[in-house]
Amino acid sequence: MIFSSTEFLVFLVAVLFLTRVLPGESARRNLLLVASYFFYGWWDWRFTFLMFTTATIDYVVGRYLERMPDSGRRRALLVASLLANLGILAYFKYMNFFISSLEPLLVSAGLTVPHLEVVLPAGISFFTFQSMSYTIDVYRRHLPATRSYRDFLLFVSFFPQLVAGPIVRASVFMPQLADHDHRPRADNVRLGLERFVRGFVKKVLFADTLAQFCDPVFAHPGAFAPLSVWLAVAAYTGQIYYDFSGYTDMATGCGRMFGFEFPPNFRHPYTSRSITEFWRRWHITLSTWLRDYLYIPLGGNRLGRGRTYLNLAATMLLGGLWHGANWTFVAWGAWHGLGLALDKVRLERFGSVPRTIWLDALGWASTFLFVMLGWVFFRAKDFSTAGVVFRKMAFLEPGGSHWVQLPATVVLGAAVVLHVAVVMRGERELLPDLRVPMHVVAVALAMLLVLMFSPFSTNPFIYFQF
Image (cartoon, rainbow, N blue to C red; front, side, top):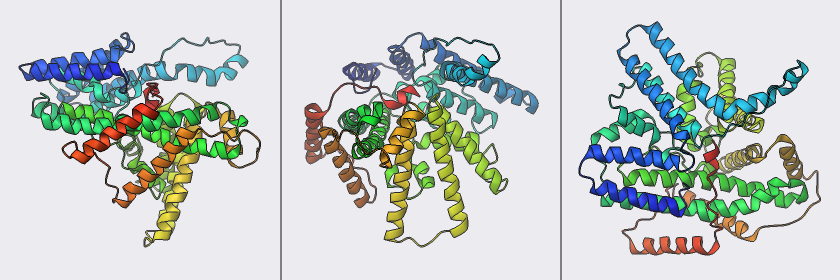
């Protein structure tokens, strides 16, 4: 189910109603668990068993890790759990990628490996990382093992953030599950609805409209003039932000309706003045996951300058591969790894210099351009397509159509105006408050614009494929 679809809205209302009328907290948690598996199974019921297997492995391992005193056996059990999780992820997401990457070598050795018909389960990277973080935290004794099997299954499968994040750790989710009942209350429903509406507008009006411009250009970039390609790359820069942050707003809104507060995933990343700052604002739950469970265990910045750069490169390369089984995603990760390394060099050489409006403007412009160029690798289907886009942007291939998609151009202009308004408000979010009549009018106008101008194609969220 897509959050912006009619089916999901009916599903959400039904779950809210049933959760409200059920008499006990245990019954409400049972309902939320069943609803979460129903939500995931709506796409393909067979993969509910995959999610169930992942959760069951980590629940059992967590119980053993808590009461096992021997450090060697605990480490072996953790490694076994991680190998099981990563093995499942590797098979479903990366097996054909590995086969195709090794195919020239295999063919030269006289071996033929057929392409496997493997379907990628929606959100497998998200629920796998979420479940793995629990096992690692229990192993580190940062978190007690969960006693309730039902509650742990709910933690892994909770439908609002199941398929595209934010990545919610057990240390955040489980205390909220235990501290209070989750009968929908008026204030929580109102606050959740405000966030949901904001995300809905981002997704349906902004992201899906911008997609109508950038999709044809990235499909055949050689057919378009450089200016059209530049605008298409700018449109994708807006699309991926509004698509993913729109999903996050809708997910956090749904969670809030049931009394859960999820960690923030975005803090206006396109206002960043450096790549380091960008990664503190973009996909925060993934960047902190990679920091805590990969970069720091590799040594972080504690083992000298050269090792720090190596750790940054390894973290971002794997972060790029996490996004998709394609070398273009690895290139995107390498691009950002290079940016983070250069930013560290800048800080080491020049230190912290006094901020001025001109330095801030230069930092913002260079960061935004760097991020925008990186999105070419992320969006292009292969390096050949990315190469054509880059040549067009460098005006090395001047020919082509000057086609511009008018609604997307208007939406892109509106997005720029909204970002300027956010900056002028000290980066305070433009939040609706449904207790204020004028805000209700503004929300009604936004929904009217959605109905009038958006494609309403219920496009899947971009991050569903990850």
